[in-house]
Length: 200
Ligand code: GAR
Image 1: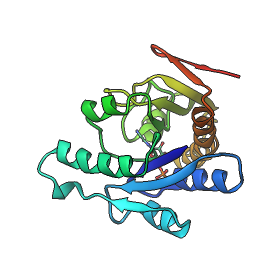
Image 2: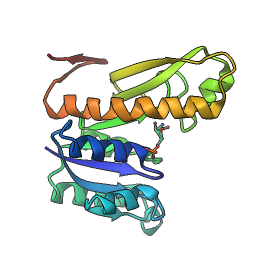
Image 3: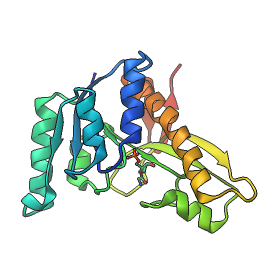
Image 4: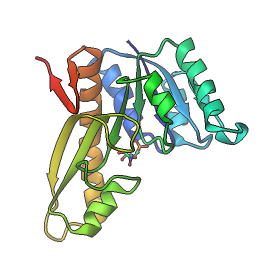
């Protein structure tokens, strides 16, 4: 199955996916890495792994639908069956989401529906929760909202620093995301409304 990963920044989750494929833990063809940021370190990681990359500059398009039309062209050309958002800091339109319904997944560094948005780890830490975690979910029209595929919880220890918490969250992400992609590519996810059943 051909998959595409969309990134805007560092790309550590992309790296975890690349590594899982290399180790044979994930049978997927990572056919395309897309970024909306030419400086994203994720692009370097992809090039190093000899994966096709494309930078699509949002500033070059008058409206979002033109940007997404370009994006769709690339996805169609590579016959992409799954879009993996990995730190892609751009909200996709409902038209785009509808076109790829149940074929876009996202990772969020908190236990949804808590602490949506782009600072999930810090927001949970500042709020003083005792438990946080990681969520992988299907993408729907609302931000950080679609049906949940996998979640893993993590206790925040007494006196733990934000930096230490971030490191632990990322470690969980790097295991959970390849696992969720594996379940998808093996056809083991059955969506029923908000519920995602994991078939054995
Ligand atoms: C990850 O922690 C991911 O969960 C988060 O962006 C980071 C990207 O890191 N995504 C969100 O907050 C989405 N709401 P990476 O570029 O090193 O993979």
